[in-house]
Length: 291
Image (cartoon, rainbow, N blue to C red):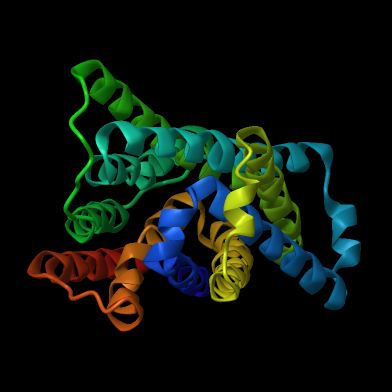
């Protein structure tokens, strides 16, 4: 049950980290926004590791475990995020998000094939309900201009690639984190993500976007880094280690469910019937996966 709770808390932290002023999301692209947040989270994970006497835990890391952990980061946070961003530019959020959100299905498939995980009917039913709930929760107006058919086809392929990368990342975490302290593991994974993000900032030369931020916007970045990236990464690794990548992926994919009430409180967004129905489906799916 602790792994289930960690997965749900991870989804909550990701939802909190995603709540930011609309002006901030318009000023920064996702990679530039994630660069300072991941840096803050990496420093936080490192400080927690060292201040709680976990420095000796680094001795348990082998080269193969390190390879799995770094591969999970660079495949999911590097290739996967880039594919998702390019997909949004071609087919819009309303299409890219549901396609890329199918990663729990692929995570379950990869877990069966490569980790010999045994699925249950409860897990499969819960997965279906959660995915349906996410589809309803993600129903938004999309003003992306109509693109040529070839570009739309490429956007769909990129969204599928993002889903595959996210699933592969989740599965690779399991053997890499097995037997290791989750907080220590986070202190390795998050800085690796930060390197990818800052590398993208350097290549695309988006430094001016960061310098133009206000103190209030930097406060939101700080909160998102500490809670969404820092605490979320620790909880995610613990959940994967405790209940496996497939169930962890299903539970953490419910972040939109937690973002709904947060958006109503912070951003004053009113829920629709579709979002309320999607919430009911997602909660029902979580209940099936949890037991």
